[in-house]
Length: 316
Image (cartoon, rainbow, N blue to C red):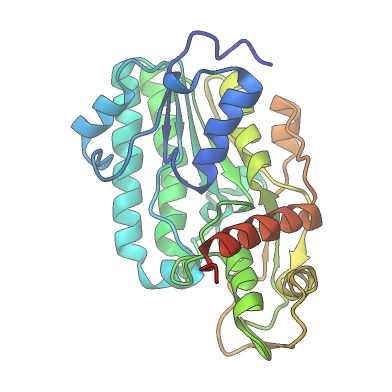
């Protein structure tokens, strides 16, 4: 248990969300932080796009784990690039500035691999972050996440802040969002496996490859970054394993017991052909090592969803 957190009050923006709840749980269970020392602002009464709200949220805190963002799956990002960028950019700017004004000792922001150029060689390395244009399929969120890295670097240069950005592989796990309008590929596929009887339709031809990182491993990576990184840093965290979308869908179908046909639709784009990251820098700088393999993580996610589904089913 790290003593770095002792006596600190911590702001976790987005702390009620998918990744945020795991961060909060991990602060309590593995770092010994009292829940009353963790601040989790809620959108309905704290609009982090407004500086005064962000300043009230961070008041009295010594560390910030910044997760708040307007997110969604590929369909959502493709159709909402401007509004997604607008909200994410404002939130990033205001929370970072509020943290600076409050004099926090550490600021950790989460990004994702969408920040990398569409044509960046895979596995992605931090030094290639600015070597091309962001893919149009996730332009708004991708540019906002890359800008977040630049904001962090500028705040360190001018103000000497300890600020880092963790670029994470695709998150998945219990408490993910299963709303079809905004869900990512894993929850969307789990949902289809239980809702479709005969045919499961998949966007794209199934050949693109991705790296998926279990949510508890992401939470651990963020906490390690706060504890061990100083100055300005940007690091990838990833499982180090790639899987094609086709193989992922077939694996989820097997684990859920889906027995129908799987049909791919090449007419609908499936995103970048490859999107995985090299996590060597995170391993070297903060001893990051994922602990949950994909199949085990999927089993846990499916079990969580089934429990939730059973609780929502009216009893006869």
